[in-house]
Amino acid sequence: MKRTLMAIVCAAFLGASASVARAADAPAAKPDCAEKQKAVDDANAAAKTAAKPDLSSCKEKKGKEKTDCETPLKDKAKTDTKAAKDKAKEAKTALDCCKNPKKKGCSP
Image (cartoon, rainbow, N blue to C red; front, side, top):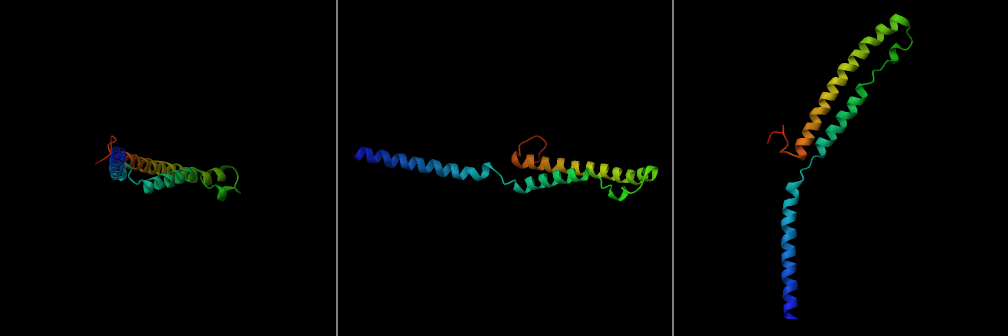
């Protein structure tokens, strides 16, 4: 009986110390990247909306006049889309570096 009790106490002590050690390692293992994830989501949403130019102001025009009206709007949409995609790429890189700081291209 005494041996069984000692074995149970030892097992409980070792189990408790192992779980304390795991709990101490857990916060260091997973950094909080929620802010960077939100930035990636926002940048991707902005890239989608920038890709579609608002041509409603040119709707009533016809022929060459309509083309002349739409061209600058479409050009602006292209540049806005490119800028939004670049921003999304930077946000994605920041998120990847947050999740894995040892990844190539991440500063320590």
